[in-house]
Picture (cartoon, rainbow, N blue to C red):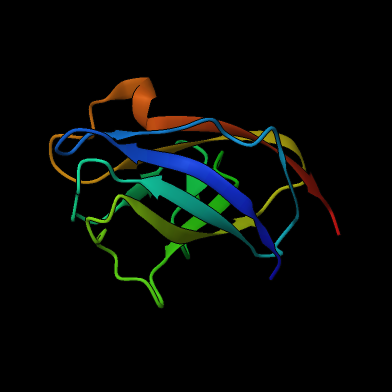
Length: 133
């Protein structure tokens, strides 16, 4: 699996307030071919809850759902699901596209109760160019 360039996607400023930084301009991949993305998390609030990922285009691992085309899983080995509370942390995100073409996926992040309702501050749209190969 190729490792994509590091992407600053998280900023927990305040006690438990995740904020998402600027996305990469685009991401290339192939259908059914896994790729890894390194997430750079700015955890200014010292949060120690589990980082969660969801989105309208994301398929849950092992499930089929019409209209959802991208499997995205936060890798927990060798990482623990919970953040450590360090100011700067890294996590791996495994992506597996299921349909070819130019597509956009919105990634939404939270760190538990009280942070799901932050709206646009905790989400980032990324444009994918998925080839058939």
